[in-house]
Image (cartoon, rainbow, N blue to C red):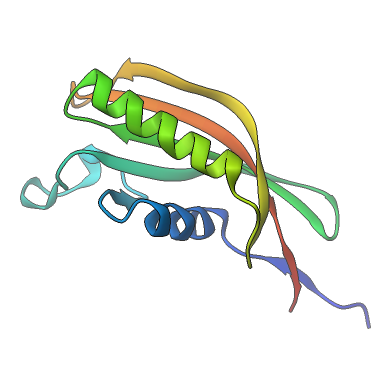
Amino acid sequence: MTTLIMHADPRAAVLAILRERFPEVTFGTKRLEDFAAGDVPALPYARVSCDGTFVRQRVGLSATVRVAVWGETDAGGCDLSARTHAALLAYEGGPDVRGFGPQTGPLPTGDPDTGQPLCSFTVSARMRPRAA
């Protein structure tokens, strides 16, 4: 029987990397408007999401990961977005992710739902395979 090859959840893997590197920042998987009125996290807040995964070989899964940073100011959000982007691109690999490649951004804008300054980017996460 052929060995099953699995990969970690890209969102969970990136959250773990960013939370370790930036412990003073709140990271999650929800948009600001998804929080209940009294549960909205303090800014800055960064959301990690996965825009899709791609398998070219059984052991080679890549995921497009989007990080959106809401800041109190345009400059603060853009600065944190640039630092998290740089940290992921400099990541030398670990148990779940081999490394990251650049895709888009950081791209500053405003959140149309909340009005808060928002800056986002995408990277390609090269996920590390493991036997299941």
